[in-house]
Length: 258
Image (tube, rainbow, N blue to C red):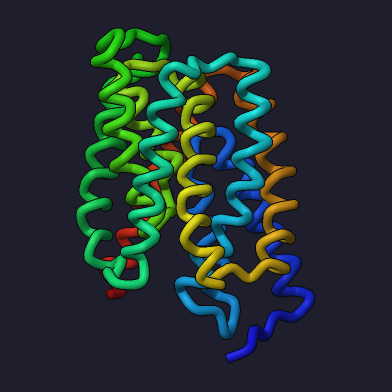
């Protein structure tokens, strides 16, 4: 079935890409906006939507990761093993994407997010400053394990990946929200790349649509990263809670309507 996208639909899709890029740069979760918007395009298949979403997202995460790197200086000794493991996990998740129905995972993710939201609200000082749980090899092993698991989720489904990365970096590893968001962008770039390593050779990407989304995502990502750096961890924490609660609402609706 050919795509049927009029000018208004394209404008709304690009607006969704811009907003997704901004949200993703601040705290992750841009896929919550961008992927559902793609799924509304007449004639698009779920796998095409997922693959095209990755093209838009990788362009946004590339510019936000670079902006964070220049202004925050995230620890690449943590980012490297986490990103490499996430890339491998995302490739594996993409392989499974056409075989496992995503709705099986939705109720589990919903419960986890509700717990995360309650935990973050109940502990207002969490993520205010960096207090690492481990050092040396233990820290890098924990980072790689988190990257592998979240990368697999990103390749399989996608929405909320950046948010899960921030959650894990703050709650498990002990980073403050701002450096956690900076690290999450580097890792999220790797997860997008890992998924595209599978989707591109299989012809699942709609390149025209993906590049248009990518330009909008890139612009939103640049502005979002600059705003997050300027306003600090407190601002990121507030946006984080808003995105988590929005993701809970979205997934809750999927469960109830499914």
